[in-house]
Length: 408
Image 1 (cartoon, rainbow, N blue to C red):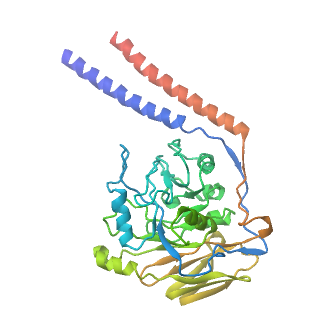
Image 2: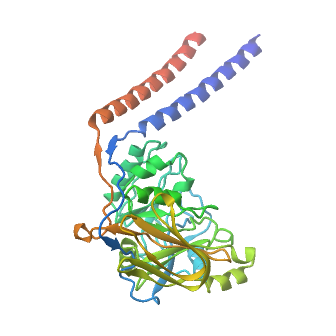
């Protein structure tokens, strides 16, 4: 009987310990869920008599720099998620013809092994939903994060706080961020760049959802690299920037202006590195791009399987087959157009959006970025969090008080 009593006692302790850990986890989630609650502006499409040309300062096709802006390396931290050093990672990209490699570890600023001031950035976010942002040009790392950023207001608050301390932000991999929705994408603003779809998708529909709501952003396609030794992971995405140098001042200016286009690439050689190196040195590319009056023009180094112009709500505005040039008249009632070019061998090129705007009101299309704090809902929401957190702590206390009484 004594043995049975001890056995039950151990089971009781283990059960209460597990319950306590779960309640502590709930308490931590609640404590990190505080946020203002915003009134978001209604979606408003781009309009105006002028056409915003992201390639307005591209005056030559000879100074393009190839870049990846989302790269992970080894760090001295228990939360390390990559075993490869910055030196090994940058060397791997050098062999594949990249000029710019930003090292963007999670909540950790890693010095570049070759340049002291070289695309300074980090990836913000440890949360369970992988709601991550690339933070460019910040002097310090912001450690606060919502463990479960479910609400659009939580996500917007993070963007606002990060944006106040950096040069600009990129919203990372929205397609791979659980619980992201069209409604959320119609509300969020304050980021300058959208990271284009990863995985097998080439559609970038979330980009169009945001653009259709009046949130203008440029697009970057990045490897989000963790394994530089795997040919199926490295050099699968890249960006070509019209920049006179790889110095951060020039790169940052180009990123702000939009003078770049992005690419998805097949895994050339499927493990044959020599074939991969050779193919990466001879990619199809844009030879001219811009605006003439109301007509957007674009030409290529070789014929594409198809050229598609996408517009508001992801509508297909025009589609050409077996073409190396497009001249598209952007109608006054069409808010924007962005081009996607598909090649027979699997490459895909994405341009930045051309959009209607009134240039007398600013240098960029008017973004739908207004959001005001709803004071009543903010107070009620945070009081609810505090009450739930307090109830959780009381539950933990009662759990162990009950056990003490049983022992007596």
